[in-house]
Length: 361
Image (cartoon, rainbow, N blue to C red; front, side, top):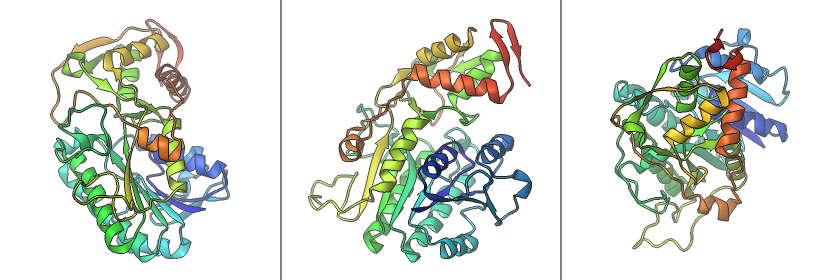
């Protein structure tokens, strides 16, 4: 297939592009390469995929020197005019929208960028998919949409209408917008509610990256809610396997959908929403212990209360994705953390990881 992936300089987008390229798909990647976190890391991901950073210019297609079937374009999805031109040029079979302003805590102080990217930008994607007859739109939602829900595990069949951050609200808005386009224009859409994705090339604002860096540098880590946190940590390889299965099986109408007992996960339109996680939450303190074991160094913990916009526990019910698309996470937290630490050491040129001896460049 010819697939557009937005956000390919990002963590999940980078890995998904690699997966699809290896199986022979033609991939066009789009990313605005913003400075929400270290641009050097985004450039490094692109370089690893064969995109020469020196060739980057806004709205200029750059061909990979490693993958003849990969083209990258530095572009913001809020730029509707240029976005439409590329839809016209490439005639995509499917679109996977991973471009978004990420981060729960950042949304507390920078709300405008979430509306621009996550709402206006997503509207542009929907409009392009509508007008250029895209067969399937897959897009990133988030486990954060569950908000105040306490029923565990989180199920797509339960109502999720009480978000506790603007980031979560923007992701819930994406789902509602997608349903509208599925209903009005018969656009096949699938939303994926990601649960705490981690692994090599991960985001520096996520727990594993923050904790690893601080522990190696001998700095304290902040442990919120006094450590009483559970997270459904899901390794990146399991995530991209799941996304690939979803892309290959476009959403269909649920002919058994009952308007008197509406199921939020499906519809009379070709619309669906899936959880995509591991389905086995781990305590934050156990997660920290795993990092300590891998780097052979104890963390200096500073315990703090719960932060605004955060939730104490996440756990994904992944039975729908398993039953419909044979999604089966394989990577344990032990193996996942081990692989991340190995990547981190190599990427940042860290040697001699022993207690008290750390070289960081």
